[in-house]
Image (cartoon, rainbow over all chains, first blue to last red; front, side, top):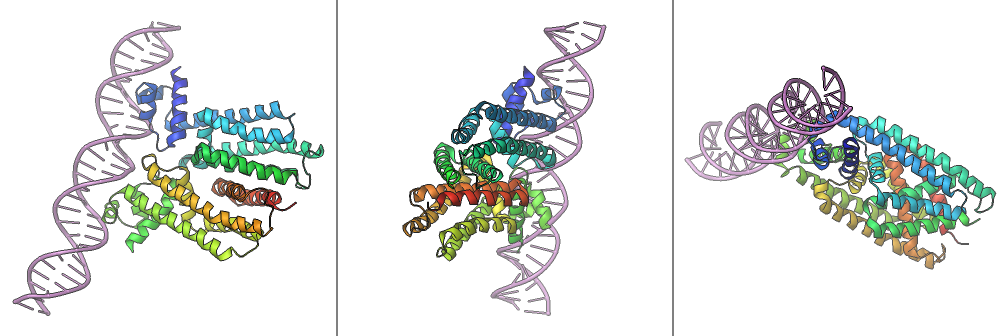
Length: 193
Length: 193
DNA sequence: TTTTAACTGACGAACGTTCGGAAGGGGGAT
DNA sequence: ATCCCCCTTCCGAACGTTCGTCAGTTAAAA
């Protein structure tokens, strides 16, 4: 129970203030214990951080895989747009995505390699999951096949990142403006011959 | 001379390790002085940081304004694509853009408002500079005007952010892949039927 | 009785910051 | 030339905090 709460609080603090900006004392305070008690469950700060990391990346991957599995029968237009919306909702709803975004962009220097291993694993997996979906849609002539499935997927992930950026610092208004514009133009390009 | 060097070193340290991850001692070490000497030139760490901030945002704005002024006579296709390439070069060349990206995404919490004032000023200015260019191109029938200049610009800035992301953690190979794919699809959507 | 989970207390290290003073140069006045 | 004073630049020493971590203790649960 306490273990769970420590991880939950740590997740949100790391997401909000980064690794350096989060102290063991802050985490412990919010949990309602003394900072030394955290050492009952974790070897140290790094151990706690990497443990949260591992959870978050596994969870994010599971969520995206589930989403794809559930929605892959949809028309590609709905599928891709929902994919974007899905991330937006996830970001608002739980701290996982916020944490994941922040520490993917700026991991603590001394843990760079370990974090980036997770990051690249995640990105490659998502691309691998998405390409076949686009390929099928092209074969079914739902979208122009002159672009190439790989290229279309890479550009789509670009749109997604552009939306992540507005999630991070733009606020809801800017985010919606961008979501509308980016998707509109992307789909326009994808549906043209 | 020392003043200039302090700011230069601080810029790069902040860009690389963030606000919390950069200590006065580290900066001083790299300059070749003791940390106390920095207080000859700055009231404190925040003062130094905000001073660098101010320089960086002014500089970034000047660079983008100059670019637009110099290239606005080009066909819109070349103009926009060069705009993307230009940022890529800037990012590689000087630490300004790296700093600017990092602290735009994750400013130190206690300076959030002051930093974000700079950020939004910058973003709005860039959008204001870009919209008229797109409008003219639409009037001249270089691109489809069914989209709306505002929307096309917002989507373009989305493409730019997607490229920023790959600058930050993707490395040259991923960056080029994305630049190619994102631009290809964006331009496909923008070009006339 | 052993184990577990939380505590108190304390540690050395690093942090940003302050103060006082040393070193050196420039410009007048003697 | 010499002396004096001011100003700038830098540094040694130290301050009060906060940091992550370790050791030992206590009280309840198993």
